[in-house]
Picture 1 (cartoon, helix red, strand yellow):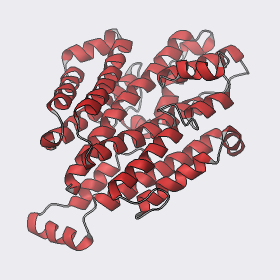
Picture 2: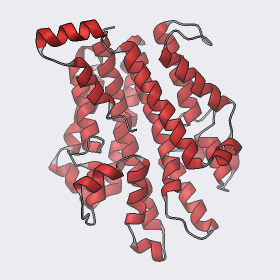
Picture 3: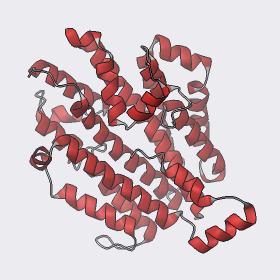
Length: 344
């Protein structure tokens, strides 16, 4: 497979997953805002600031909105074209990547993605967001899940399939960790077991994890059990460990390297991260500190993504200079710009 094609398929998948998870993050904040009571209920910024901080978007938001008004945070995260990680921007980039590789994906995949793009960018989508935001977010989530199901049913299991799934699971691992980080970014409050249970329950619902959590742990929500489920579970498909294990398998499928060995840096980094998760648990997270542990985890995921780019997409230096002289186009700059859209 051409590296250009693999790159477009990989990023198409990442952007769809990113749009879905931004919608899930928004649901978390809206639900907490609606369900909470007391002094915190009047301070909606208490709920949006953790989302912006956890997604590494607080700095850009403050630059664009020096005197933010109610609704600015929501607009920035959903429909602001100046934000490369807004839902609108992610869906647009996913569609553009899909358009470039139309011959590599199924007609049904293109139709679903195009339908989502038309909804998000339409006056109907804006009205839906303004009047019934939960319905708007649910449509984004459902479309992404439907796209995933269509992909499973219609796409051949070639290298393209491996790159598509690779983009999805790496993005999912990153965003699941950011769901947990929202809790660490929240303003500290006196111990309140009811509020604690409400917040953890909302985060689990945002990850579609509440039912599976209750089957294992019952109705009691504790930090240790939530960490076990969302970080270290080997069975729940949105857990970080499950996603990293899948990414490790996909990378070995692409290269043909036997499991347990590595032939490039991305396989080495993915294997190292998987080993770390395999031999860690909630106690290790609490000893290190939840926010610090998640920061290190996100750095490792970003390094793995960068290594994938270098192994399978980056043009060798000599060919890069030659292409730049012939066409006046800088592929390294182009892919570097795309890579920066990964949250740091």
